Image (cartoon, rainbow, N blue to C red; front, top):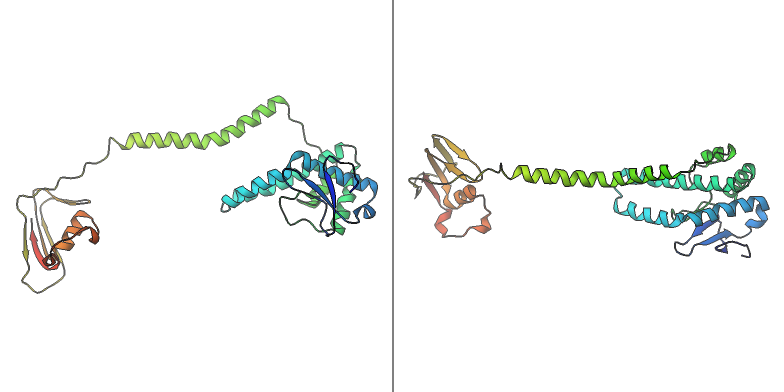
Length: 268
């Protein structure tokens, strides 16, 4: 379209609202016939709004946030940030349009006419005119509310706060990880030694019953059976199952003769 602008402007046959498409080389799409449906003042305000999106590179920021939403789709804070980004980008453009000399009444009427005539773009990475909460936007435009400019001190403070937000969790993780590693090493318990004066395993000639354990004296049961100064009798348990239980291993880690599956009487 033959409209003077720093970006290419094309006409679209659809009924979507005016919007900026593209990330690296953005293009402004205007629906066919919009010049006949809006006044020249309203059209100037709409163009000023869209060109503000181009200067701010809002499409690129929206695309980056879509990547973040794809990765962290389960985090509600990410979706809240997405809604806030949409609201803030539209508010910033509205304030700039009014600050350029466009009358608030004309600009608000232009947004409402676009809403009446065209549908909003379904893509979050296409910067249009009617995004965010329309009622609050119109109210802010009519009262001509403008954002406060940041001076150098406020910019430094904002940068420091952002750095603290990013570096704080990393520092806490490194600190707690180092403390845990240093404090855990000296107190690691030594595995109890396994030693017996007498150990006998005999085949059981009695009728099979449930496994029976008989312990006399002090005993310690950890990852391995540890008995010091005591006697343990185990009846009706195969040597195969006994070794699996005492050493905490899986069946595929133990091999031996077939008689290991027979019921035994064990005495330590």
